[in-house]
Image (cartoon, rainbow, N blue to C red):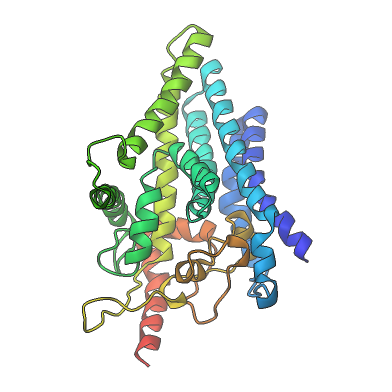
Length: 359
């Protein structure tokens, strides 16, 4: 069983395979990756029972230290970079029509935003420099490097409070949430970085400011690709920046969809001294669906992640007392795009969660 679980975490590699296979097969096959993510995965989640088992306490330390799980995430970094440069090659040498562009950009975003940011999120929580570096590399490929600052030093501190841009409010549509979270999350990252530099006695407007670095690096990355492929093809390959920034916007929008459903309506109680109660597994929506959790490195066990952010993905626990999503992320992000459907499905569940807190 343990070996099968290990193999399961390689399932993320299905996405780049389908993206490339779909392109070379052509036609409607270019939507193979979309069909897998939004049809097959939800179907398998529905047909296969949820996995509520946890790693035995006596095995947690050994499994936490096992290099295999770290290796899988490292592999993904190189796979994603390889696929991006392959995509640059394709759009530099081939002529795509309108719907092919749509399939190619959205398919790439499912890979970079769906899996890539998930891996970046996992690695960004770790203390090892190589893991933090790989996290930043992945975030660079979707123009969302400020997430490294805001998520760790902002979101995890303020989650389930009115001060957190990434906590969706009761009755808030995803579209309104997207505008607020993207804007306020970016501004919050600047504030957090300025605060860090001021404490160190460093000037805010210097290259010590990570936000300045994070703004420049994606431009350098796409600039190198644009210059290299333009020189190779003998023309200005405008398609590369157009493709890169389009898939980036879709990629980080996928992240914001996930943020939306992970914390919808969650609230921590404010204490008499003005602070908030400690984050526990009841303050995030959880989903223990087997297939989508393999694909997303157990990100859906989000309740345990927020309660114990230092834990590696392979040892995250399921908690019955956590509020449970009715389906895995692949299905729920589609539901979130249709506010009336989302509210009809989630508001009754949120009300039950609130009532339990009053008992």
